[in-house]
Amino acid sequence: MQITSLQNPKIKKAVKLRKRKERDESCLFLIEGYRELSRANLKGVEIVELFTCPDLFLKTNEKKLIDKIGCENTYVCIKSVFEKISYRDRPDGLLAIAKQKRLDLSYLEKEIKKLKKPFFLVAESIEKPGNLGSILRSADGVKVDAVIVCDACTDIFNPNVVRASVGTLFTQPVIETTTEKLIAFLKKENIKIASATPHAEEIYTEIDLTSPLAIIVGSEQYGLSKKWMTLCDIKMKIPMKGIADSLNVSAATTLLLYEVLRQRNER
Image (cartoon, rainbow, N blue to C red):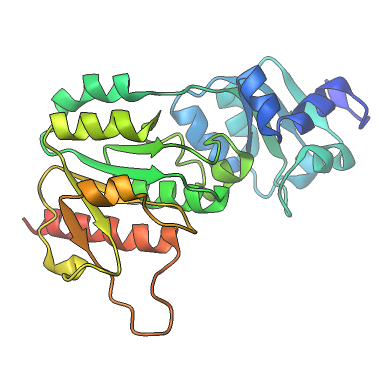
């Protein structure tokens, strides 16, 4: 089926999914881009509708991916229509509506028994979708056992989270829970809680991070809440030699995660 009108109900439906209220009510979300859709398909994300625009395809692999997805509700859009539903500056002609699949702490309670030395990343109250997406990308890079989003400010299915994560939102377990429930879980499982703070005495590269571990990162403006800082087993600092006293949360997270990976590989 070809769509040539901006007034088509399916186009209007896709545009509405940029808003969180619409995503929450429908339990659907948008996935745009070849890499993002490839990773979603690889992990079995259920695609409800697929919109394509061959005029915007960047290479020749798009047709193979469309065939792999095998969505019955696949539509070919003219360029102006696809640009209406796209949320990218340079769309590549692939956008899907998919079903949300949310995981809570009960998932980890079952999976924890399979992990010899758990390694979690906890993101508390991250406000900017781009930062959360970048954090997910770094977490995938070091292969954490799960990313746990607690007291969420940003919807993990925000289109900009999907985009900034380059589809790594789908390649790892992403758990949503509250601070209180998560603290109880980590304490019960004897998992050390580690955070970075400018007020710590030891540099992050000088601390043993090879034990069962949860790295905690906080909001861009306020950092970690007092509750987390009080409960931390490990407090470490990232050395700052300039005027600024801290890094962007996604940059700091990347440094900490790769230090854990370095230490574990050496051991």
